[in-house]
Amino acid sequence: MNKEKFRQLSGVEITDEQFVQFQKLLNSYNNWNSKINISAIKDEEGIWEKHFIDSVVGYKYLKNPAKNILDMGTGGGFPLLPLSILLPTASFSGLDSVAKKLKVVQEMARESGIKIPRILHGRAEDFAHNPKFREKFDIVVTRAVAPWPTLLELTLPFVKLGGEFLAYQGPAILDDLQTYKNLEKKLGAKIIKVHQDQVGKNSRVFVQMKKVQKTSKKFPRAVGIPKKDPLK
Ligand code: SAH
Image (cartoon, rainbow, N blue to C red):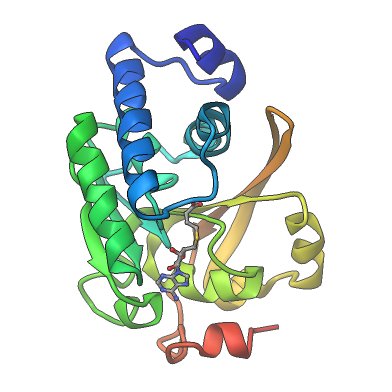
């Protein structure tokens, strides 16, 4: 990988310093991934394309400027860490129920010279009812966290009024958007745009939403219910 190829694949221009941070992140990711399994993607090209570039593509659709950004279900730190490289002045938080992944996310940030994100360890169903976090984020991003109706219920309560939600999805979301048409309205959001991209061989779809009304305090429902009994 080099800066020019990075730009061609992602559509985003980065500085030399940012490119160095990505290279450091690659080394750190490889080290940690060989110790504890954070992701099945282990080859260098796969890491650049499926983790780094894929995370960066969404940058183009982020409402600007954003101060407080949450990656809900960040896992091994995607899209959190690449977006933090691109937006060094924003405050990032990463939420996940798996503590060991969050620890590694912080270590990878430290080792790559990325501002250390705030870590929220626990279930989205609980955090979303905590007044410190409910409707407090300018932007929430998610990638590969849950089926669509579950994802909307878990995520939209975190988004501020006037703030945005950007969901990194695969092409199957186009069917889900038909099946669950207007479900976002029930949770206080409206779809602004559905962006379709090609990242290497992969078709990617970004659903961009805006929070236009507060979410009813009923949502999200208790831990596990949003997945077991998804909204319709
Ligand atoms: N966003 C990352 C990880 C995806 S795996 C990436 O794209 O690589 C999905 C992650 O979401 C897992 O780490 C899982 O622990 C987390 N997750 C799923 N449901 C959750 C919930 N209700 N509360 C908190 N974390 C959740």
